[in-house]
Length: 426
Length: 194
Image (tube, rainbow over all chains, first blue to last red; front, side, top):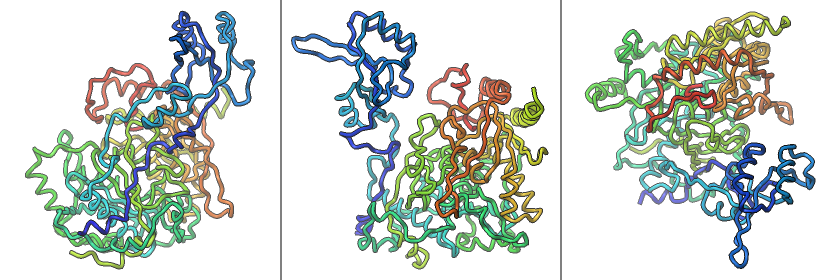
């Protein structure tokens, strides 16, 4: 079976929080005291005013213990304490007052520092001090695993990103935005920090390619990943052998060190990382397919089919890898016009996935939050500047208004170097 | 009020002018100016609705103007880097995580902002990317560049703009699944694109 070749490759969910050892979760010290249940309401209300537990919102204020003979003992958290701080010197006067008026005898105890991310974690936490647990209310496909068919698609799109990353000499990062419901590529882009073009408008259209790449289940999967059995991808093997200094997200600050002469025809833009360009292209595609109705003064993006050359532009020539399907734009637009009433314009990239060869930097990861990407797949971690688990973990920043699910497709470094030498079977 | 302070307010007023332009165009009202040698050399305002690209924040717009200009003038990359290292940004709202990261990548010298950005802020509210100064051990490529950052410049004017915008309803926001109450507090404002 052709699924066999994927057996050794894993797709790993990168959770919102760094996983903790279940029995060794980080804790913090607090002052607590046993209280008379009759005073519980009053004391808790007062404590919430004078000493709210700002960073321990998941911790319950009161612990209830049932002692022998059915006796109930209540203990309440007074305030946070620092380690080795047995004195109550630093507590605010209002709290001191409360302690003396109810004749409390504070003691120091531990609570779990972070909210539980699983039922198992929560059960362990409550053995120390009760906490609250809010199970994930949303469910994004894949967190609980992928079917074989979905895995195949995921590998195919990742392969497409890898081909793009290695398609032009210097290995750069590459991004492929996909509509998973239609198995359709929305936009694709390479890093454009250094591009042989002085015309930004050209490069943005080029990279969009507006190429529709529909995979049917009968498609033959290319053999590029067939040799995986020989590679063991494990944590100790995480360090890539090459530095890949051309990858913008790995070395975001490197651009300033480039020795390039002003006479060169390089177009330099330190922020045009692959993900940023792919987002821009998907936006351009959106404006093209769904021209603004209320504002006809806004000129939709012009794509010249009759004269696709302007071959004088070096950026156009660079595009040879994407020129295989010539009438894409026409097809795309025709298809859309025929079904315009049925097609609802998506809000930004809602529902779309992005495939990146390297874990994105903070700028790119936040851009993907803004653009409402649904899932991110990347192959290689980015220890320098990665924002999806390596340096930051944006998928776990609760305050953000959108959260994507993040997956790592575990692939050996060799996969990167194989994909541009082998021609996919069709 | 001393001279440098009144100068800061004068420049922030120009950023607010930009935010007003965004408001007039039904965009989330955030604006900015970039200053070099005491001169305003670029300005920008939010353009996320028009472009359908939620990364087109005021800062990114203003930066693109400069890069295009400098490119035209034939500046080398090290000259571009040198330029940015002498630039100061005045923006009406704390740069989001993406923009703060971008400003760090560009190596900007200093940022003044109006109101803080409690949901997305990358200069102290959620992450502190402006403090992210780490040089690599062998002094080759840095793994972070910090910048000086001061908030609270004309914050109430900046908040008022955002509040006015969201009270009249953000036409570009997705339809809520449930009806939502109109936020009355700055902290509850849904800063959809900034």
